[in-house]
Amino acid sequence: MFTSRPGCAGPQRPKFICVLFALLVLLKACAGVQTPPPAVPAEEQGASGDRGAAIWQRFRERAEKAEALSGPFRLRAGLRYTDAAGGTQRASALLWGNGKSGDPFPLRLDLQAGMGVTAAKIREDAQSTLVYVPRENAALLYHGPQRARQYAQTGGETDSRQPSSGDTPEESLGVPLPLSPAELALLLTGCGGTLFLPPGGSGAVPESRPVPGGRRYALRNAALPGELELSAEGAPLRWRGNNGWAIEIEEAADDNPLRPDRLRIAHAGGRSVLIEVRETERVSPHYSGEQLSLALPPGTALRTPQQTAAR
Image (cartoon, rainbow, N blue to C red; front, side, top):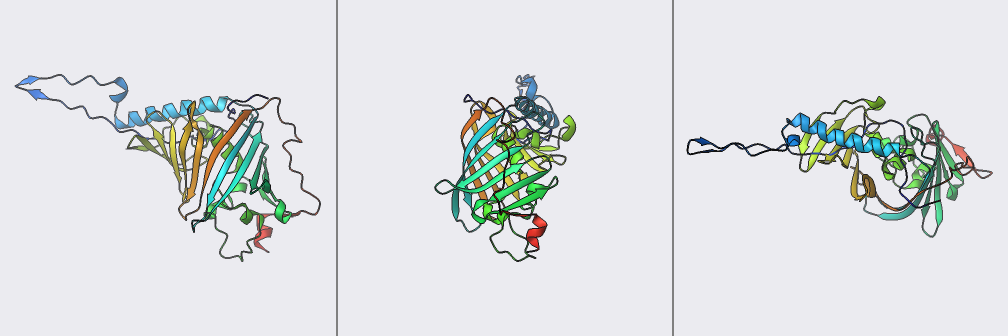
């Protein structure tokens, strides 16, 4: 095992956002003599659409380069949850997987709160996401492509049509996120660009408009649809979804602008989580199937979201 930055592997998914202002060339006439316009760098001479395409291409190149660096990883992070009333709670996360290119599954995530108390254990594969809450000796199993986002789609609120006991596994996790564990792993390991790129390797440039310091792109056919803001260098700054969620890279690693050291995920309803990456490792050899498994203790109550709602 050696300490380094984790590789990035994941399914081909659309990329991240940033923005840039177009420069206007001022022509100056003096005493009837035409003064030639100042030289303008070639990259500044194109139309606004060309500038948007150039920034998007820089971002695409960064994302594709990061995605090509695959391999087993282990990541530790600190989390600070803030609820709609302003209350805060701290937790820590341990995330690990084999990071194969095009296939990040299976993936494991453990959440701890307080003095090393395990709040939840999560395992995601291509078909389902399993969430185990030791405190309640209960587990929730999500199926299908929207498995881990089902709770997040309502902005972190339980279905008002159903009674809320406050003790179901998904309610015990604190602030839900608009991401699956695999998508969160992609973001934290610097491979999040795949979440904002068009599927299938399409070279189409999304519609965009200038904003101070970069450009903002409208993502429609991405794993995370919404608006992505990119810097002039093609580094992702922030994303705003169509469901009230927003993601902002508050501080990026010096060696990789796609890999955040500090990442904030917030909902318009007031809930948010600040994630600070504390340690990353490249791991060798690959994790075994047992190391990536999640065995439920005897007597664990296993439910699906539909069964939970019917309680």
